[in-house]
View 1 (cartoon, rainbow, N blue to C red):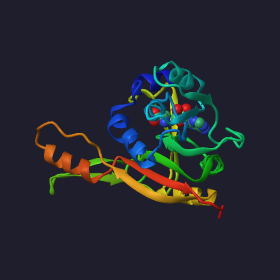
View 2 (cartoon, protein in one colour):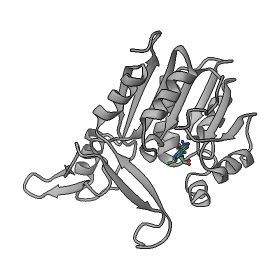
View 3 (tube, rainbow, N blue to C red):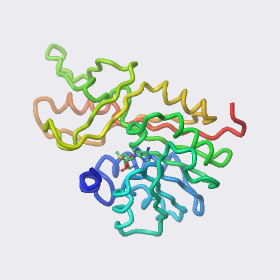
View 4 (cartoon, rainbow, N blue to C red):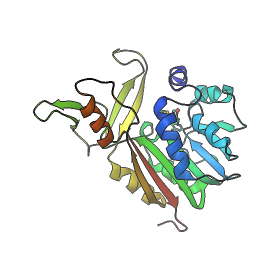
Length: 246
Ligand SMILES: C[S@@+](CC[C@H](N)C(=O)[O-])C[C@H]1O[C@@H](n2cnc3c(N)ncnc32)[C@H](O)[C@@H]1O
């Protein structure tokens, strides 16, 4: 699974990561030279390397030993990579960070309460957490998709279910029925805000990012480009650690 993911995203991240997600998170966190950043569930470290180039002191933590090994092999500035579980009450005990990023990973983790409790414990007062995820209102595996309205000549997004949380297997080789799977957990947006508030993290910003791509010329190109700009692919939420827990 780790080999598959490392090959899929490469040293600098996938196209969506490079064009939209990683620069978006970097802008939202507004990191300063010398600050301490934790990249929680860092995978093979594409965001760690990007942040470290700004003179930020980066720790990357991931549950996958293989992905941490892959992260260490990618050339780049000095970064501390650690294997660990973002839900563990002991993770990084005694440490403090100015900022935490959790990129395209919170939907792979269940439950999320302990993750946010750890973020609140590890952030300095006022410290910020940036979460980036596939948009939970529009991209629900198996429960959403594109459809064509012939009458209105409109490409629209179909959402079959949203409020019900779900645990969905994702195969590493789409189309194959067997082979390794990874799990994704669908939750409505309110679950994230509720869990962060419970941990003492107050939402200060929310952004929705649409695809940067454009369709090749064709009969539906205009409709596709319009739909792409209307329906965001990714959601980013920034929260700050409150001075006092609620
Ligand atoms: C889709 S990958 C994203 C990795 C990276 N943030 C990126 O943007 O490329 C999800 C990551 O979450 C990690 N992960 C899943 N559960 C975890 C947990 N409980 N603690 C730490 N990492 C976890 C996986 O090992 C995997 O690297």
